[in-house]
Image 1 (cartoon, rainbow, N blue to C red):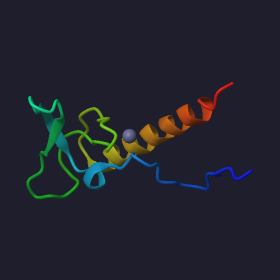
Image 2 (spheres, helix red, strand yellow):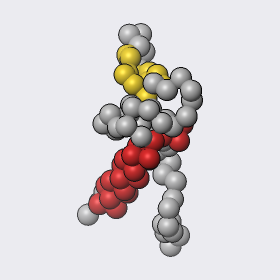
Image 3 (cartoon, rainbow, N blue to C red):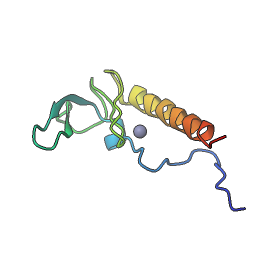
Image 4 (cartoon, rainbow, N blue to C red):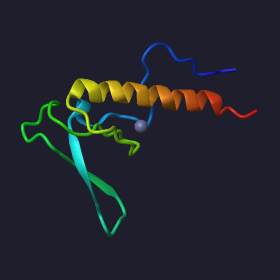
Length: 91
Ligand SMILES: [Zn+2]
């Protein structure tokens, strides 16, 4: 059997932290497509500032005051996804 085995930090498909943890928000909803658009709150383009981290899956962190905290949130978010995947193998 060829089972994928996680080795250390892995990238989860579909779960990328936007712009390395840059601050986003508030979200605006596009009325036509029903999509959520996140605007960056830091015009300087760094990862600092107050705002939400956004994952490419659509999840967003609480409002946090640093890129480091947003990266931490994303690590926990991915760990949560991995736990769900591990638990969801059927019975
Ligand atoms: Zn995600």
